[in-house]
Length: 146
Image (tube, rainbow, N blue to C red; front, side, top):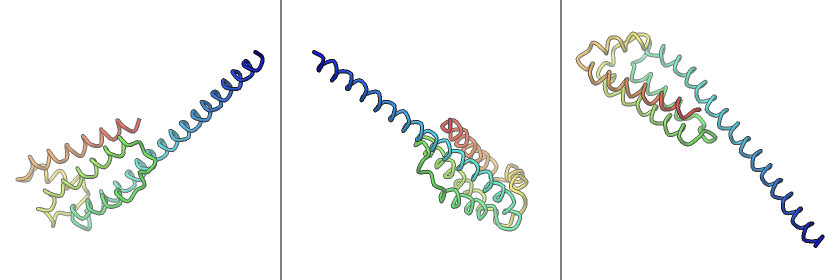
């Protein structure tokens, strides 16, 4: 009987240790995910600032292409899957903006100034729709970051 109690106690203790280790592993993974998301958002902020002013010297399409290529090169390996998927959709939405910006290769200026011009262009309806996709996918990425 004492032997059975001893075995039962050992079983319970080993289960508790496994649960404790699993919780620590889960917490480590969660911290890695948070750091990954933070890194992506910080990198996007820096790259976005560069993109916003690159179009003063090169076409908006070239600015967007460089920006999206840089975003694609970031390490998403520790980010949550839903966040990664949403952010990749955001990158694709930016690329789609080039369907309009490719038609205006000579426009130069800060990105928001160019956007204001494109919102008044003959392609304004398509452009506004594409920009809405950029914002919608950004909002989705933010939602899955939490």
